[in-house]
Length: 123
Image (cartoon, rainbow, N blue to C red; front, side):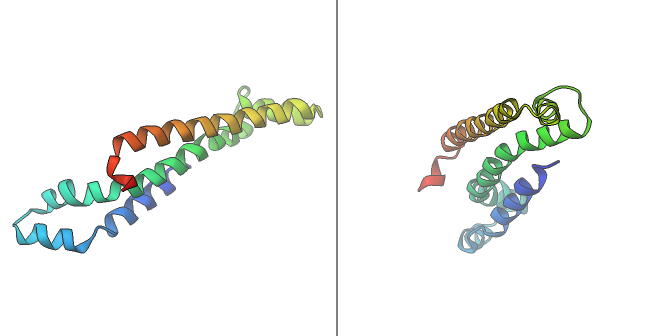
């Protein structure tokens, strides 16, 4: 649920900021609402949606760890809580480092995939 808002707001912004010239031209040529969405609005919104996905991919592991703090007996969040309670600071920071490395790796992997999936984003 933590990734819902960045993805949804970016998708909404991308759809809302579709160039009006493209929409007017397609309407003039007789495009239906479905054709406008499929051929004009969605491709125009994909770069903005990709930004939301990049943010969400970084936030998701953090949300999972916070969820583990609240109600789990295993995982990185649980390990961090136990290390903190026992004052094993190096173990707590090791878990934090793993979380940061995981988030960074997910970001760069997602970024590469999105650049291949949306080649017009960088133009």
